[in-house]
Image 1: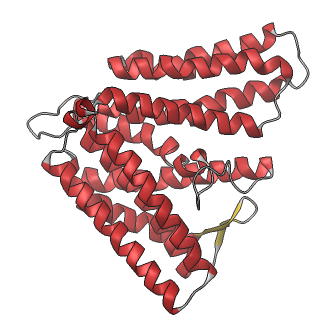
Image 2: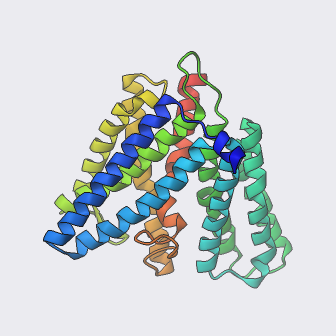
Length: 317
């Protein structure tokens, strides 16, 4: 325990983020508690439940972003494991797919090992190149061709959502110190998580308050143009003011924050479509008010890789 405590890295930027997050959570908790006392409603009860979940999730992400990097890698690897487990629990896969499922799970430690070593090229190609060829081949070797195309599509996609995207969070921790700005990978990790979660919250709030015109009525009826636009604009503004965590210029901050908001919406919409196909409201019930792990990290699974590569292109290349 002492080793874990001593490994915690709290520079000035990270301390500011922790203070901001805790202040927001305290204000939100107090506001919804008073609101519920004065005028109880289903919406307020839902927000109270979500706020409780945000406390737990923020603690987990802040802990992962500040402790020894090895602990962060292990924690994110377990997150990928439980995410895949949620998907495979809902899927009605064939008995002949079991060996390939084991292969999918074994790809988790390999991918995170590449992240830990900072082997950028192998990290980048392992899943979308090697595993995308190996998985179909193992499915063929099982000798069962009935509905094989379904398994060939589902299993690689699950790796992209559950491992490839999320593992970029671990790769951020391996990001080298940049120039003379004293900006670390952990600070960038906190920036990404904070802006992605802020985007989810702001799109939800704007949608609840002003939502009228639906974007995807057959996929996710609660998503509206008002919520989307309000969330994108507010997230871009928040990202601009959180720029002290990054080495980016003002224009770069606006561009990347805008991209996070757009890709975050895409991730949410993709998982909504998956749940619609499965015929379920949530991917699981692990997190009260949010469903399962994939319900909570759906946006992170699609924002982390574009964010990392944009940062890499701007700062390193």
